[in-house]
Figure 1 (cartoon, helix red, strand yellow):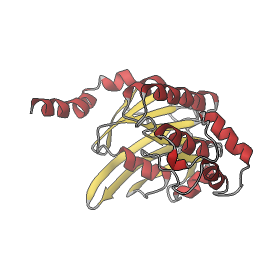
Figure 2 (cartoon, one colour; figure 1 turned 90 degrees about the horizontal axis):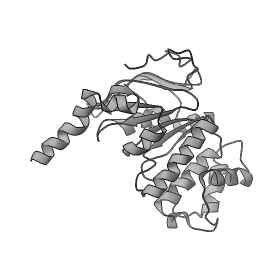
Figure 3 (tube, helix red, strand yellow; figure 1 turned 60 degrees about the horizontal axis):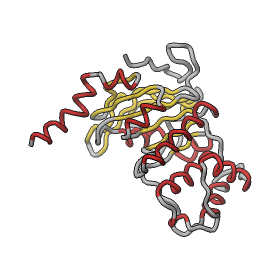
Length: 258
């Protein structure tokens, strides 16, 4: 059963405070319906995993939730406030951080210069100690003089995440943080996300194709297909849902037979 979404993001059915939510989110692009009536909510310290086949609308949803794109209709709430009309930078200042599928770093900057740019991105400006805090938190052990473009994928992801964490966000939107990583690196991401959620009380919405990662860290799973939420619950519950099985596996079976 899908959870009932509070209209003002204040509380869910169990009476617990909801940090972040959206209701009735729809999106059309070029005359094509991309998202249809999406409702989500997450509490502080909760990890909500979002899965679905390619083209399900997961990244488009993150574009709206982060403020990079306005919805056709619907509302986004953060800490009880309607933030639907706020752009990405305003949501960032409120405590919402977002990463992308591809860890793009500044071409011309070193690691130290990247941290400095992040520290001075908006007021209040942060100190080098804040940057060190972020680097230590994610386990980034790279010289400040290293060119950011020389970093391998995992360290690029660490650098970008450290730049978010030094601002002490309340919510992270993570788009495929394990993409391009080997198993030992995925294990490290697993431990980091557990720390952020359970010890630092940061809410995390994570889009991820690596089901094994979500199975260990996600408190709940939302499954999307063709722009809609088709199932929600524990990992075992959603994977047993016939609608999810059809969305994930029937196309693969047809391809294999072909």
